[in-house]
Length: 331
Image (tube, rainbow, N blue to C red; front, top):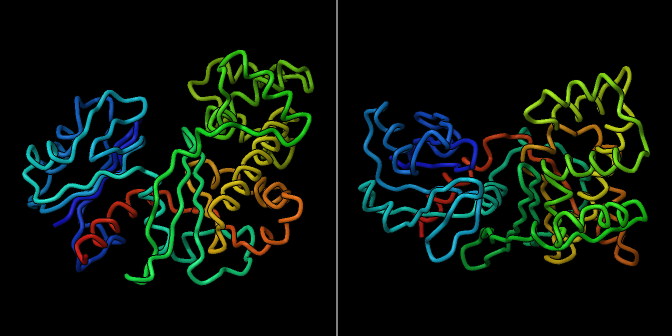
């Protein structure tokens, strides 16, 4: 019996599965509010207390960097170490991997029903694959082909914290607006959940579009304004102008950064948009993503040949952690 986990600052998702059933058919699965527990061991104990199974190995995808088997979760005071976890949980083997590494590990196992294609392209056999995931933050990763094993290997990255590179006069104004607040303006500051909020605040402050009174009232009482902004932008009957502009600018920035990732790793095997945001804004991605993705001067034809997909399966990080255990069992 194997344990897989997707560990985030807001929620922790755990599942048990077997090598025979595979990662798509968990024996049992549950989600826990992370902040209700002092550490990962406490969450796992609560999960296993409700089952009758004994676990042998585990893999946890963590929303934060993993160095030498140690990790901390962004926005959560948990410290994790594979040796301590193995001892405290009584497991033969524990793996800690970055959440984007977990998502990337899942990519070769995804099926057509898990994806929405923005550009079919022409994938190159064994070509590198890029993964970019705007959610609460911005995650990036990639996969390289391992000829010895005959399969892809996921590689972690903290590319979401690289510097934001404006492509238009409007984006340059956005950078100038954010620099006094943050000093270093990373891609994550403009291409994530917090990025949506920052872009909206910039457009409102610049007076390009007025904020309607009904929208101001809704936003004032909202814990998270992003669902309101996205819904108003995508309203087919009467889209809100400032919200539509927010989403359009967000997609242009996401497309440009995804194109940057594709060039840096030469992602001729494809680029996958994961995370919580892309499935929710699919109509805007359909309309504007590829233009920004391919706007790379002399290399635009190379980028137009790259397949681009939205990962629609919300359990991809958990699925990838399960795949990681199975891959390492066979090594």
